[in-house]
Image 1 (tube, rainbow, N blue to C red):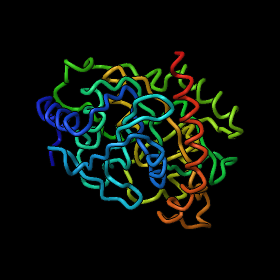
Image 2 (image 1 turned 180 degrees about the vertical axis):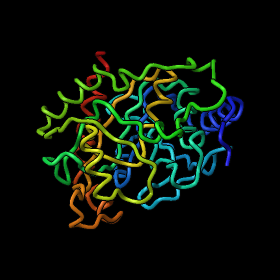
Image 3 (image 1 turned 135 degrees about the horizontal axis):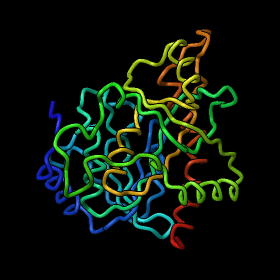
Image 4 (image 1 turned 120 degrees about the vertical axis):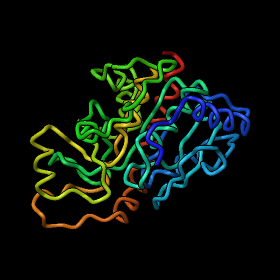
Length: 281
């Protein structure tokens, strides 16, 4: 397992991606579990499987198609990551965040990251969408920070600030887009755990006491690397299941995928609205 990805390997993957499309995106979207259908809305699309890129990890999880889709959406050139890479698949944090590094090297400036998450807040229900206003980096607190190892000085500083991980202007655009499209929008803190086991009731009670509103197995490493490279970030969680704080229910991945069918149209409306209004920002 390759713990640290040197810049030469990042650039090799980036150049391979550029050779497979004439599109030059400035906005990228990472799609979470069950949210792959959004990529079908991209026009003039070029599809590039991760397996076609050198040094690139391949997604192994059901509900993650495992390809880039480059094209146009709401008048903007975008790169959609149809399925992400997770630490629990056996990849290193360097490999998990390699896609974001590649995005940075091809000129992407804004990252919209989505995920399927368990609703820890007692008012959240399956099918809700949550605007991520902050995150709990529990993976990083246990030593799994994606910036471990030599710093890539060409991309960002050794000690990047994470006090404003989620761009306030983009958050306001998402709020406006949700309101305009009649999509109720929750807001809260996303807790990132390594997975792949779902959380125990004690885990969830701890997370709630710590201030988490939703929990999942992704996103936070990607956001850290994005901010390290100066990218603006917008985060959206699709609440796929209600957290089992008392042990009375069982959570399954099939439940997460099924919830994506309800969540995807809502997330798409918000993302489309943000892309439209971004042009004036």
